[in-house]
Image: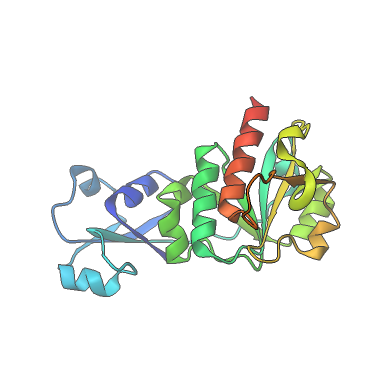
Length: 225
């Protein structure tokens, strides 16, 4: 199971594909929480108890335990006719959470991660998604094998590619974003059919991967409509 904290984030999981196990609260439950169905256990706790079970410096008024979904296999056929985000070795839970939240904003419903990407159910990741995890399917798989079987254009976020604003995107493809320090692994780089760069105007050495993901999502969405 994994933890979500705060009434707003917990509410997002009602009616989602995720199954809530229990809710721990400090009293004064909103009316819609009483009607969550009998299979969600409700526990009233005091502030001290909440502080002990919370992962936050300043606990919110409520915490829930949610069942982790069964790890699904992602079939290459499911990737056709759309753009999919592939994350290669993302290490920072805050970055992954922000990418999930951003992808949800732009209408993506799944993210595919390499096995060495940080866990989506890490408390810091969950917190950074601000409830967007409820609408997102997260897959962990061998990205090289998936790319091989998908037979789709592969766009890699790299420093030495064409400008993101000049790419003729087409209607489908895989967009690979790499590790915060190392970028895309050498293994996956060999599959990249088009290297894509967010043009730099100033002096910063690099862009945060979650910011890069936002710019890619924005451009892809613009071209899909």
